[in-house]
Amino acid sequence: MASGSTPHFQNDMGVPMIEIGSREFMCIGATPPQDHPHVFLDIGDEEGIVCPYCSTLFRYDQKLAPGEARPAAAVWSDKAA
Image (tube, rainbow, N blue to C red):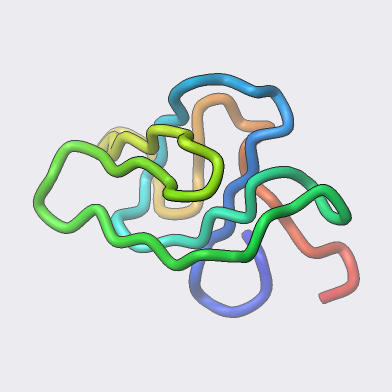
């Protein structure tokens, strides 16, 4: 998980959908320095949300723990933090 309590996800793989175990999160697009503005997204009671920058669909999956993703490579962690 990224620094702080808000998980960050990225889509270097270029997949159209990422399943996540968090309803509130940050999408960073791709791994820095190819990232887009880091945007806070809140799925709320919906099934998913589309990032307005990279068009990745993030779907909530209650089977995943907060901060987990499928594919697992979508979880971004700031190594410097």
